[in-house]
Length: 61
Image (cartoon, rainbow, N blue to C red; front, side):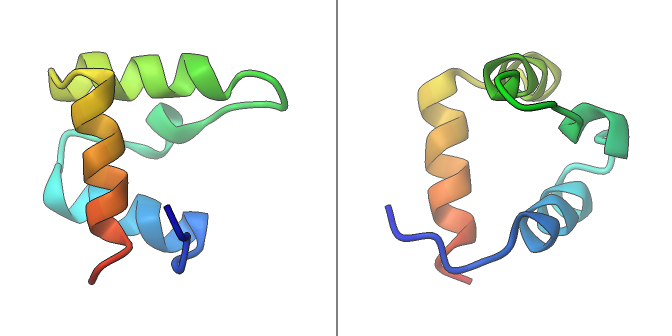
């Protein structure tokens, strides 16, 4: 997947699409990206595959 949008843009787009998300949901430190993805997956009630597809979709806007 080619990443064309910054992380800040992706977060803003996700927060607009899913108003229940907050900045805290996107927090992660080096080596903790997986835990952030797990939080997003749980909060959005989406599988990791669905979450990956969602991030890929953000690159097409």
